[in-house]
Length: 190
Image (cartoon, rainbow, N blue to C red):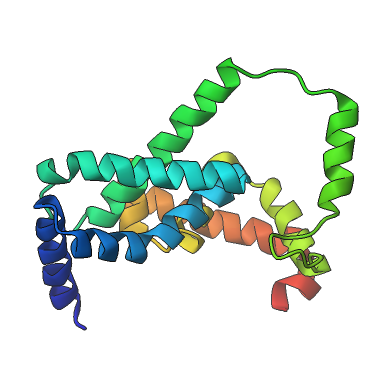
């Protein structure tokens, strides 16, 4: 399907959703949920919180869809809502944070066992990539996550972050270069 046909189809779907068409809502949710969830999970590292934020994002879309006019920026709008919801929730949690005892954290670390959500031990390469990504600046990491988890174009990332396209492209380039350096020649080529 050509980009103009995709845009027309999305426009029609958004219009039907705004009018309360359940099938249109289901189509929007099915199309975008995995990407919103993946981005939020990558940002916060908490699957339950990511599910909560994803649901909250779509609740906001339900409320505001009647005011939204499709001009080719729906994904940017959707991801900006998701990022704002996460930011607000993290601020709220920071204000209400309760100290956790060290033995509780140790118990969680043992229970987690370095396994991913499928219960399979993470590969050395994946662990190395996660460690390298943790060393990126927050701004560079956010661009990487929006690009690779959110599957947004660079123009959409620029819109979500409210930054010039050149800045986003430079951050992506700098982040990937740093990851290659941190991973070394063996991991970067595999």
